[in-house]
Length: 151
Image 1 (tube, rainbow, N blue to C red):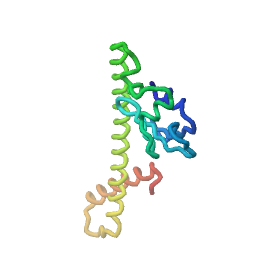
Image 2 (tube, helix red, strand yellow; image 1 turned 90 degrees about the horizontal axis):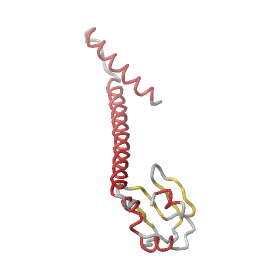
Image 3 (cartoon, one colour; image 1 turned 30 degrees about the vertical axis):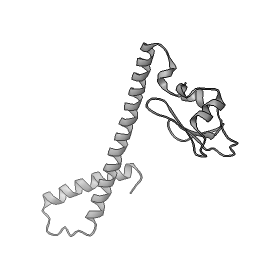
Image 4 (spheres, rainbow, N blue to C red; image 1 turned 45 degrees about the horizontal axis):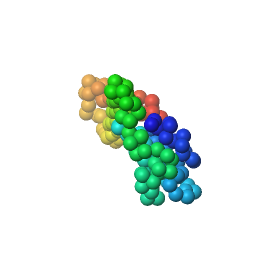
């Protein structure tokens, strides 16, 4: 069962980010969303914060717990391997995006640190070469922060 198939059986579904949703739990009289649904590496992760069991939730929806695992989508081994490959590729893309965001945040922090550390420095004794090098570093730092609207 895909995430879209599963969440289409729920009421009050709200997206909570990529591959994440909240909804009203079908296993109890829910007035506000207490059910969390998230795509994991091997299947759907389903949790009711009011304490309903996974079995109660799936029974109420008329599905089996095994249906929440991606490998249960097809009995054909070739299709399962292809699906696993696609999920691995999607996971790699998500990880690459997280890594890129981490590098961006690190660059912003370093740029901010560099600019903050340069405040109040006396440059009277600096050589032209050192002054030029520091101005280049500060210019790069300001450009990074300016591109993010941080300066």
